[in-house]
Amino acid sequence: MQKPWLLFAQIVAAVVLVLAALLALDRLIPGLLPVPGNGVIIREVANGTTQGGAARPISTFADAASKSRPSVVNIFTSKQVRAQRNPLMDDPVFRRFFGDRFNTDSRPQRVSNLGSGVIVSADGYILTNHHVVEAADEIQVALPDGKTLPAKVVGTDPETDVAVLKVQHTRLPAITFANLDNLRVGDVVLAIGNPFGVGQTVTMGIVSALGRSHLGINTFENYIQTDAAINPGNSGGALIDAAGNLVGVNTAIFSRSGGSLGIGFAIPVSIVRQVMDQIITHGGVTRGWVGIEVQEISPEIAESFGLKSTDGALIAGVLRGGPADRAGIHPGDVLVAVNGQPVKDSVSLLNLIAALPPGKIAQLRLLREQVEMQALAKVEKRPAMAKPAP
Image 1 (cartoon, rainbow, N blue to C red):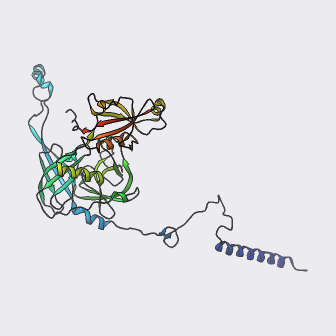
Image 2: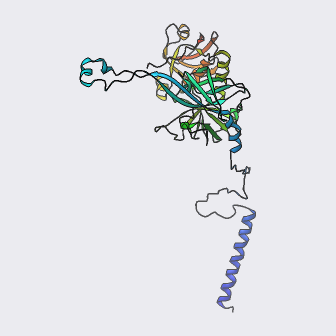
Image 3: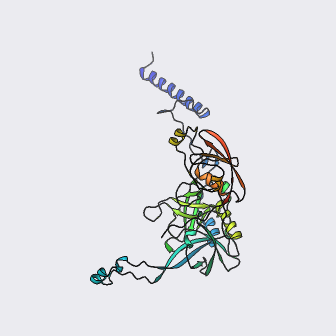
């Protein structure tokens, strides 16, 4: 009869052999053994690779920055303004007791502003924002090599906040435009400009979103959103991709403090290119217009109008005597297509009509009391945007 300790040793050895065999089989057939815990199977990087292929870390964007920095300039503007006189100084009783201590000097004063710009042609054309050069009577462009040149405004488009300047110079380092079809959310981008006047600065971030609209910044909105730091003075500067190509012109930030909070917006080069070409060729931008005021279709509005979806745009107002009025369009109609192109919302409608050449006939498909109708409107030139009262 075997001793108890010898029997116990034989059992332990057998169990170890069985476990070793199972572990060997699990190596050959993953998932054979049950996973402890919740049973979640994860994928881990092995030997620096993933299932999609080798992971290629990028440690620097110096090449992209050095390629584009010579094409980004600093813009300094100044204009003459007249301070408003204190209205209390027109009261003789007030003047008798307080003298001129509350009087405001009404003599003209010069106010300076700063921004950035992007060289787009070797012969001196420069892109920037309309709000950077608005009402300026003197514009100076500082090149990265330190040379300063006077610039004149070729034309501006307040509704997209794009302006084109011209300097008398040749062989300038023009930037390369990117193809936006390849731009994706998550791509690395660099913002180059002159924040707070400290000098040319490069900041890094990613594309946070594409096609941002309904922000109330400009009439026509289709922004690239980025978390690359954009501060006052960066306006008109370049937003470039990791290859150093221009993807947008920095134009605005969302901020409660005046500094960067990681929400910046750039005008994509697809829009910038169209506006720039029209400004250089014609001195301004011509857009279509039919004289309507529209609003978004909310789920509540869709339900009250008996609509199947929120697609389209609700006609909130029609200019009397305008193209839409002459075509028989009424407030309360829902516009769902322009020349066969579906209307998704009020922004897409605005862009579709703006792209129509003045003088052409636009076919508008609309719903009136759930009945589909067709209307033909002769497109007119969009009037210039009215400036707000001072």
